[in-house]
Image 1 (cartoon, helix red, strand yellow):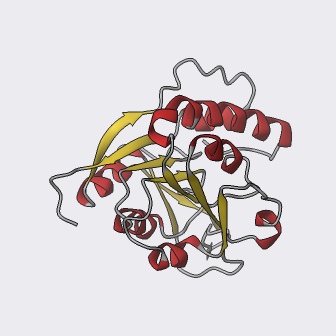
Image 2 (cartoon, helix red, strand yellow):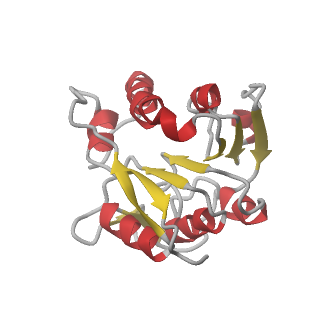
Image 3 (tube, one colour):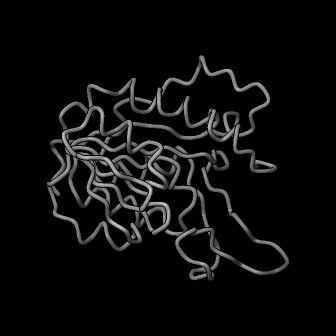
Length: 217
């Protein structure tokens, strides 16, 4: 379900709905918690997370974007999440919040492994690409005979094909990493209208996972 053309108004409207369903409706999971946000962009979700969390650590690779975030209880890390995540302290975060990033990276399963390595109680995985059932994989940006990664953190291709995992593959990987489905975000009341972003998001994965306490990390 491709988004034909970027529309800033549609994108903003989609993010407002996402913020309400992903953050406000999950406030009990965030209240007074230490939260790690991956790919914070310009802080559209960071500021809302900070209303509930005790602290937020926001990781963003784009220095221009992250320079626009100035929130008292937010610590900023300018770097590639694929590398930064392994340098962070294990057991330091209660929640990992990963919204709108899993479909951008050329290394989604590696990123999931890094999240689980930190051993948070809860992880949110939110995407704007549904993948392809039943395998739940989309192969992105293979055009003109050139294999190009969709990892926005790299201007040059670095790994060939970029695979976008869907719900089934993400949940299988999370299970193997010791996390079980806590709840799927309820999007049934979302009215997408002519908003391509909302339409794509409504069909995509948005799931809260919780650590299986019987799993040995």
